[in-house]
Image 1 (tube, one colour):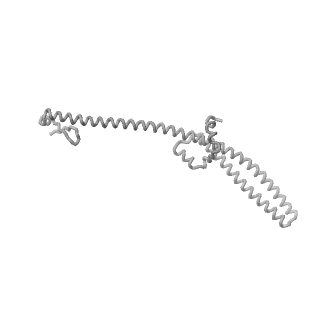
Image 2: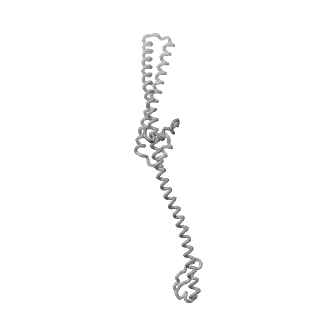
Length: 208
């Protein structure tokens, strides 16, 4: 038993695990993440077992139908009181065929029991592989989410800092222009082609 099985098997005792390859929700898992070669191999193995199981079930059903028909023929011959050699031969032949059907049914049912065990084992392995791939994808995605979250938080900090810097520089421009205006007077300021725009709060050059 592998380490993974040692960890998970006790928790899964008595749990009903659906046949994964027959479950559309299982297939949808791999529209979100890549399917591994190991999963593909187990998927194919499980599908082959299911095909064999279906074929055997169909054969068993067919054999039971044949058996019922053979019995009906025997009962019909007995009820009809037909004791001719041909009728007796037909009854014996039907009994032999019924025995053949029983032998084939027994062999098929034994194989079905073995296949059912193998299906459950392969399905269990497929579940473990699927869980491993999905949780690995979740871990990788979570790591990226954390990185993005850190980036967003840092951007918020930088944004706040830059908003403050912007406001400080706007105040600086406004104060500087006011001091220049008070010290040198509007005539001198105009000589240097500088005029303050109150709406933009920045000095703009204006040439005649």
